[in-house]
Image (cartoon, rainbow, N blue to C red; front, side, top):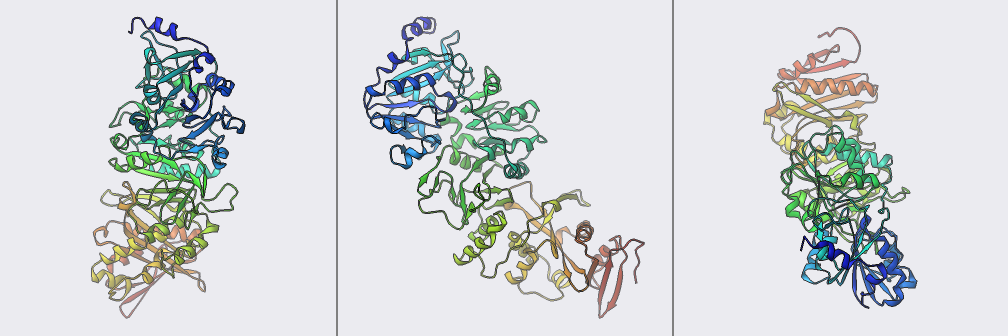
Length: 625
């Protein structure tokens, strides 16, 4: 068979009209995906439309070059979108075309089992190699499965289609008709990210560790992360698709795949979209392995990649964590695609992370995309139980395994500031949060995030406290010995309730500032622990701020208090605060030692067993009275 493939090819080589003349009325026709769309065959299909009737067109990720959804073709074609593109959206809205919501990993199963029987597959391939194999090139995805199960396969042979490696080949004997067409492949140009997308990209990059394997969906926001990964090491890629933006990371030695636990040293994908440069780059390049999406998108396969990170877009996320990404109310907008496949696969991965990204508002800024509830008709693509990280330009919320109250607070904190108050009121009216819950009036100051190494050589992450830290602060207080509680609060507290904890967490970052010492940040945020908090409250009449510290017993005597005090001094001076005051029990020798090392003049007055301390922020030698 292989030796005589030339004869088979020549005998099946024909023109487009002849090849398409065998399509019967009422047939189901699959069209090759995205940039692998057979352009010549599609043009001819429209020309012979008068000979067809009720022909169902199955298409995944249609780039919109063929207007077969125009009203004039309604009696000839009925489009069934597996993912909705801009050219088919109106037809579906008007009821002249169909949409089938399904996970990308399961579309091949529909075809194989006969639930979506394919009569005809129209595909684009590279010219045959010396053994008679053609490559599906930039579009393996569901195209390979469709070609394998279709009763009749027509291949547009295009010398511009790259020969991609992996499970991307068909033998000429598997194809019933060949039509040659030397035409440039369709190109896809990713729009440059704006300021919002860049901010989101920075937040995403902070979550990606060295040696992670990444997946990014199509779009400006998921792809905005690439420029911020240049300082990472040995990243891998396992993704349904990729674009030109990934090439810079490969050339810079950031993407190597050396540490991948599945297909080490290989970029695994099912299709790609980009410019001619990208197609030339993947041609015969053993760095890339293209596989059908029944393999690439299988959550159990995805999970075999340790430290798998998926990055996908959402249209809206409600306060309970339900993600809508395929519809706007009753308007079907895009599709499920591979989003859920990768959300679940990365969640099952060892040290994996699933990240949903969205701008905080619609493009015109008129509506929040963090919403009290999704609009009627909106489909939940990623459920409350599946969601992990949510990222907007205002920060990161980790909500997996969190209560409705905790996740509502976390999501409100990354919403656009002008919508936070109404979101908080909605959360209160819906019974999600405390009726007296408050939020900071200003944005979270990322500039005060830093790392420091303690006396035992442990690196600790310091950051401003967030409203979502309330429970973590309570946990730290409850773990303190009674003596430490009395030393810190000057009373024996039987409980540290919401009314006491909320003011320590919901601060304004100006007159009220609190810095938390956090451990466990290298793991998902659910494992973060607050081991110390230093905070101050400005007194308007004096412009001095009262400062206090709380440190977990196991983390005392490691220099954390001294670092926190000096760090708070720096912040307070930036806020034009004149100095600090504090009340310290005379028997609290460790705390007195911390204040004595602040580096500013210290005035201490002892009365009734309590030192009243004042530290004016002036230059000069430290004094003690």
